[in-house]
Image 1 (cartoon, rainbow, N blue to C red):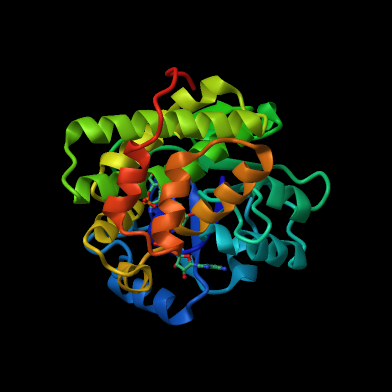
Image 2 (cartoon, rainbow, N blue to C red; image 1 turned 90 degrees about the vertical axis):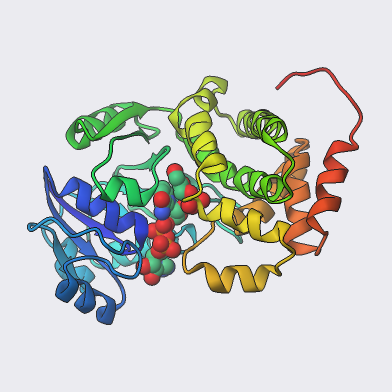
Length: 329
Ligand SMILES: NC(=O)C1=CN([C@@H]2O[C@H](COP(=O)(O)OP(=O)(O)OC[C@H]3O[C@@H](n4cnc5c(N)ncnc54)[C@H](O)[C@@H]3O)[C@@H](O)[C@H]2O)C=CC1
Ligand SMILES: O=C(CO)COP(=O)(O)O
């Protein structure tokens, strides 16, 4: 299959490298200087240093050229770039299926990705979400991973998963796109919280408690939006939650670790060099949860640290000081 990947950050580059083992892939980036540097270096030195490109991976800074013959387009920008990327494809007259791999809620609209896509994709063009536990560095290095490809049209999800599946990048299909997207978006908030707990040296017990109560919080929110509860125990839910909360490659976890050191958010973001989707998504999720009447104490504590300068230790104390209740989702 001919694939175009939009977004030459860590994850777009890793997916392009992995899929180029079995497909003809062109990786498009908006920054012509960066694309030229990647051509010379034979790797993405800024986002994935030391991981050489497969010989057949094509690079382009022209979206028209990259997508001209594509049978499938993968949008791998941050969530903030999803709507603009879909519009750019429509302006070029592309009517091929689109998958997106961003994990967040759109900041202004508070919408999950498939709702943004539903508003922007021309009628009849299929779309779906590619999500699940997958650090870019490991996928680019050819290590095994398993992902979920979710779409409202489950037959489309099955067809695309079968085409993209390989032994190193195993792809499972799902018809629960809202569940898959909420798992992928909200785990980033929980990774910030877990980073804070670990930064404050609260111990392994506290980490397990945060992950478990985080899963309950994600599930409550997702089910209120129409997701199936069982989706949250799958790759896009528990799988990605465990990875991001415990893996030191996570940028969201890193934000939490630095908040625990008392670093200001603006400084953390400036020095991170990558997107940390949990920051924008925390605000959007809390806004949605309040509208839906869903209790999200961990998300609220993360928002208070991020946007109201609540010191990390006080945010954790506010979580620990809550009344006891029946343990249920
Ligand atoms: N890095 C990872 O391990 C994984 C990341 N993701 C998700 O993939 C998305 C992208 O993440 P990364 O590639 O890691 O971020 P990154 O920070 O490494 O790179 C982002 C890239 O997107 C480009 N970009 C930003 N806005 C754009 C726009 N409007 N149009 C075109 N390009 C744009 C930037 O120039 C940069 O090249 C995020 O939503 C993230 O949550 C999902 C799974 C794994
Ligand atoms: O989504 C990811 C792994 O599945 C990457 O997490 P971070 O964005 O926190 O690095």
